[in-house]
Amino acid sequence: MAITKEKIINKLTEGRLLRKTAQKILDAPDRWLGTAYRKHIAKKTPTDPKKVMFIAFQGDYTCNPKYICEELKRQKVDCNIVWMSRKASSLSGYKMEEPEDDELAKQVIEYGQPAESNLDITIVKNTSADFYRELASAKIWIANSVEFLKQPTYKKKDQVFIETWHGSLGIKRFDASANSGKGWVRAAKYTTKVCDYLISNSDFEDDVYRGSFWPTQKIWRFGHPRNDIIVDPEKRAEIKRKIYEHYEIEDDVRICMYAPTFRDSHSFDIYDIDYYRLVAALEAKFGGRWKVLLRFHPTVRKYAEGKVPYDPEIMVKGTRYNDMQELIAATDIAITDYSSWIYDFMLTGLPGFIFATDIADYMNERGFYYSLYDTPFPVCTNNDELIEAIKNFDMDAYAQKNKEFLEGKGCVEDGRASERVVEEIKKILGNA
Image (tube, rainbow, N blue to C red; front, side, top):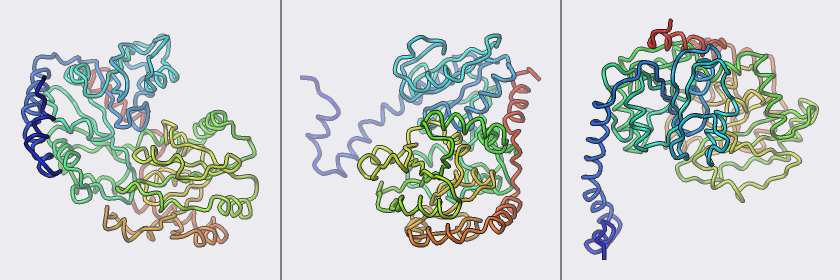
């Protein structure tokens, strides 16, 4: 009978604390060997001067990395592209008749690439040997989080790491004091050593970076590539048509998206909007037909089924749609609690509302950079307040507050962020 670490732990320990301690001790050699292995791969693997590796922590073709990739394709930049997937076994090349059961591969295929392009796209599974080999050989790393560095990975001097992040003008703190996950904080601190460039959309975001994990890194205040489709009215209209076709929404229906952030408890008690009253209030105030598009945070979406009464007459399930920015582009009115997506949505100038039933508790759990009441959005702590806020909504006053908020944060979004980032990438690749 084989002796395993699990059997040793069960024999030697009783109680959760002792088991966790024993597990860490027995896992330590694996961690050390893993770190040494990744460093060995990095040092022995030559850097490909034309390779760009994209890492979106969601594991999908989405967020800032997606829109940078799309601009590389649009400009037909001479480079080799690698994407990290959370699900696929290693997939070499994207033109596959059967891309296994990998959503990322399907998304890359859907977006396609110009036939005459020199791009070569490879998809690799996160944390696989292929992943670390591709990472070791890529001239440029482009990531929207620090998750992939929870396992320390050696970066060579001739490699460049561009951190795009996935927030905006958001209210939630994300420094070490606001995060209880030791692995995440350790990875964030490690990026202080390996990150070369940060992408920002405002003076405010610059200050957030400087006050958290990146006090000295070079900041490109270009705007966020993912927001280009939101700022540009023509792109927004095109995406809106796509979303309406995807969900088979009638042309005369307008969309109110409700997309709250997660809680560590994964509780759904705080998501208690009365959807029937909400739709009725929207129709009474703004006219026409309305539906509520529901999108829960990826960390809680598996708990959503059965927790939220669903009526297809007034609701649309948007939780599993891979690209949040496309949903934002299709949205006419926004409702959230503390999620930063509403600060992207405000670039449209359309109405937004805060529905937050646990402000004091969340303040203690996560913390804010500024008060909710300093935003342009009416703050509502229950259904009655939300309905009343909709009823009394003043578009002119909201537009003025929206303008003052963006100016006060030093926001530079103008719909050309992707172009600016790609120009810098071309310089690094020697294509400028």
